[in-house]
Length: 202
Image 1 (cartoon, rainbow, N blue to C red):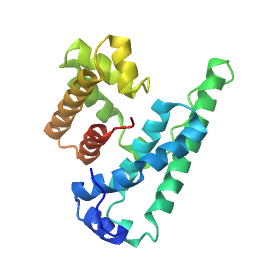
Image 2: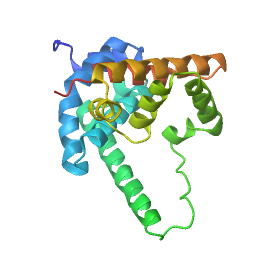
Image 3: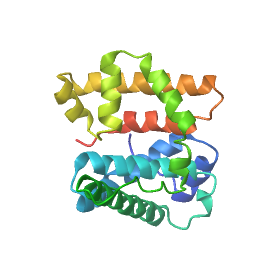
């Protein structure tokens, strides 16, 4: 997507009005730099992409208040930094758990991201995935649970990255439909689909 002459303040106002176009412009303006910052700390392309995605999910979550932000770039870096720290803490917990230092799962933090992952949400997601093909379920779990990239997932399943993208899109669409049927707001899932379609790291 070519760069436009929109001022940051204009984009933030458009975002606050639920403009997906403004969201895409902001994504393309900052994604590469955020990815480089994430790579400096996590040293893993798939994790770095996930951090960038989660950062922009926060953008969408907080879009109504963003016009009050003085510098979006600084705001994005603060969000990314917290996500990186959380990721490092998670990896440390997993490492300790694997080596027998933890006897029970750490209490889940009371954050917005974890709130939407309730038992009901997970049950509905699994219900939606159960209706998909075996290949589509495999793609979803490799990307979401094992944090593999499209390329790595394709290599694991012996299919092209484009086919992986198609399977992932269908899985997310199925989940979206299932959540809609149960009256759950799924704007975050829509943004996730947008983010997946926007990725072009090469």
